[in-house]
Length: 474
Image (tube, rainbow, N blue to C red):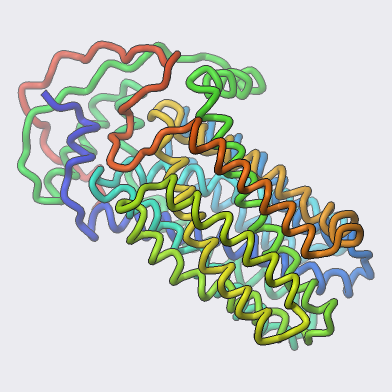
């Protein structure tokens, strides 16, 4: 007899059911992209407003990204404990409120503190959104769905570039850039309240009646043929809290598989380090080369706009050639394109073309990377596994803007700096090839790694389905 998890994974795809969750989750991801891209646009503006040195400007991105690192770990753990739905909404609310307050910040230290706090909220969006969307997605579509979720990223970055460029002539422009982003984020918080809890999470927590209500509603709304299913008994509950809970969560990830966890951390950190370094510093780099403010902003916007096509191509390829191949080919190639940009950046047409190639190739890699991270761990560790990988990448990339502006760029120059970052990506890809499995077509909880405890015995099967309730995606 099938389990409830298998029933959900074998449902037909319906835009009014799973598609609605995909769209709502994607809009939250759009704000994540918008906010990170905004760091790059804010840095030169805040530098002028507060009379900051280049190293101090880098603190804008550092405060925000380190806050996201904290949020990724904290909210990944929260989502695995209290549920995806609650974390799904609260993360966005914290981000929106702190962004509004940041727009009113009277001094630079206050602004940095609020950007850190906003990052804590927003840092939970990626692991929580991917866990929730992935657990509702049918298995045959899951790779494409999780990859397509990343299409919201270049849309958010492009939208940020267009809005920021339009607001440049406005007095106190950086304040308006933050305020304009916050209003729709508050609206989306309200919309997210209608998303159902993941039935996979409910079953894993022993909340069988709630899990059956959601599963039965999904079966009814997608038009699938009802059939009996079992809800396996959950494993023993963990009563750890606070720092002990974080330590226990980390121990379980490494106990599950040191090879997989190390590959996930290295791949996530190096690929996103290259991307965030470019995204955070490109407007400042171009302005340093004498490019006018609007032109510098629009060059970054072109990079992200081309990235939309990259995500669409990645969505088409991820289930054909697999996650590892797609990441392994496109991420090093994107790094090389960035080195080429650094070599030809004094030639306007060539530099824009190199940025466009970088944006396209990087958006082939990142969607496949996120889909891959969301599939490497079993349900009990999925959000926290993704959260820790995301957190490690945010810590590394969070300090990168500071080091980039004060050490790497001045001492090594741009071409060598980007070449060093590309070499790190290549090394991480090489380790992933031998250390982590391909997840294409694999059920979410198939193929446990050595050291994973055996699953608990299944509960007695139900004689039939419960009546669908309003708990579904209506």
